[in-house]
Length: 567
Image (cartoon, rainbow, N blue to C red):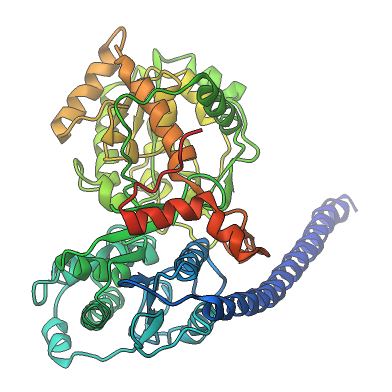
């Protein structure tokens, strides 16, 4: 009898668990299907609204004067309306309503493979051109597709495979494809960032699937190069505006335009919610010019401090994604372990496939090479507790990395090191509280380094970051100098931090938040997925009188700086 009782209880618990799991799975599936249905409905309503406004713009567009502005975006928003697609179309509508002709270069199944249409698991899978074209036709509704003098137009380019090029690259390895040039165009290097991004890795396997994708990207980039070059001949534009500039369709167009001496503007999401960033440089590198004489006023300092106070509590979003909503302090277990060490040094990492990484890798080959160096230093300094913090975006839904810091930690058995604590991307431990208790902070190119500098911490940076264009952190320029500086900081009684670091960090962050981030919230709002958007109702006068739109138009037409005016 006791045996029966002892066996029955676990079976009962198991049955309850299975039932609970079934209920949870059923609820999740219902939520998934509900969201999918809602997304589909909202998408169609959004596209109907976009098409309606686009036709109204075409009807009210005055007689155009002067050379057109070319717009091209093929790597953002292939089903739901992305924020960048929203910035793209609103800007073109404003130009057209002021009599400035716009020439849209738009894909009509013009690539055998594109970045967003790639299926990582089945690279040979057919492209989702139908949904992408549906959105493009809504965006450009009412716009003629034939060149008719000085007026707005849309050119739909298709794909033509170059058999000579296909033969030339057919047997090349991934390494050879990555550096491949054709007719003085660096097709391989132009395709590499997008391939890494869509595969969610940095180190590419030399397998047939990877070679296939890279070959198709190169063939597609070459097609874009030829078609875009012809398009520029026909339109003779005053400027070219492209999304991002990192993925091969826009990167190739940018390369072709710049070879002709044309001015090219790129755009991305800004640092604030529902904001855009436009620049004549590379948007993903975030170039900002801050006058030497600029100092924050008392009101500006208070505004920045209010933002930082919220951020230090985990109350912030980036690109529509909310991180660390339930940020936790350092627990008793952490503090007890830390008490056994002389000092604490956090190591903040990045997402390896992020679009900032091609800019970051100026000292080290990549972030993992830097982590390998850090592991050597960890093993040489057992009196220091090193806290390796994985970036929360590594496990973002629908965008999780396939080459992670957690994987690196497991591969090198870092958890066996007695002076290491690893914080996974799923943990909500407060990085800011960790910084306050640290001797100094090690980063690759994470924004946390800028904030740590504002907090008065010594920050040792190993990769080129947005903020390293100004003296904000310690940034040695060789691998040996990074090693040397790290050991010096570990041994020093006190690290002397130049006063300009904190000043420049505050100035840079203020500019990022309140000068370069252009609000579009009067015209766009989050959709079912907050990483996507939909149109708000608005009058054309409100669009033309928008400060953000005026800044963008002045930047495009009059070589402006794309900065909001200071208060």
